[in-house]
Image (cartoon, rainbow, N blue to C red; front, side, top):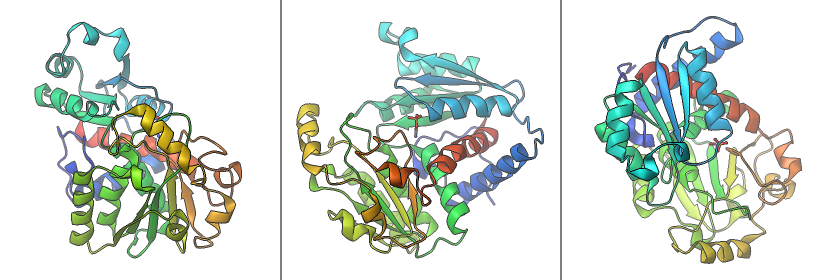
Length: 325
Ligand code: CP
């Protein structure tokens, strides 16, 4: 068990080894149990987390803010537009200065081609851990919560479980591709056979795909790609279907929006869910476009675990904060 994570950043999913992720999961389950029993667990008394947001959030803000408070610390919510960042504060200034005020710096910056570089720029200048609350490339805390939820529903031995990570139609906006990228990197390390399904224009970043293939090879798991949503769903144990944008295919947002419209039939509905195993679970990080991306029947149905998944954000994040800060 690798326990020395103090001072470490979590920006990309592979920043922590599989053994270190297992430590995080152990601590997360323990913290979940302690909260259920109302047992005090103020491991971060007097510590303060900066929570810098360049993009909106429901779950990430709520769970980080509640989590640091439950650990005995405080979360400072900072909306980037209320800072001097647009007037010249660079990532170096934020890392140097916030690193002296705070005990951890959590950042959400999902702008395509910008977010991940920003987080790494802050981390380079910071003396305290930088935690990725979602960037354009990764959403590691969502992925840890997802893994925790899968273990709760399917058990610790996930070898040969078929997990489908599928694109889904959504009209609201071109969503980041960070969730599917984190999933294809992390889940093969836990033995799941991952099938990535998307229309041809919704490829993930080539370097992420190569890293995912390497993880699958290293951990003896399957990793396949298809453009057939229904074929992918067949006999699956876990269905994780969400929308993302066509940013790898085209940098033009209007063209991306036009392309999305071709694939309205990529909705998760009861008929498609019936192709999966009868005890398959349906997952989504939320927010979802209801009855566009997924039907109410699936989202609110017996196979859906979306609220347990959202809850586990809290426990997984508390584990990482307690271990790193
Ligand atoms: N899943 C997720 O990150 O939710 P928010 O965008 O509401 O934080």
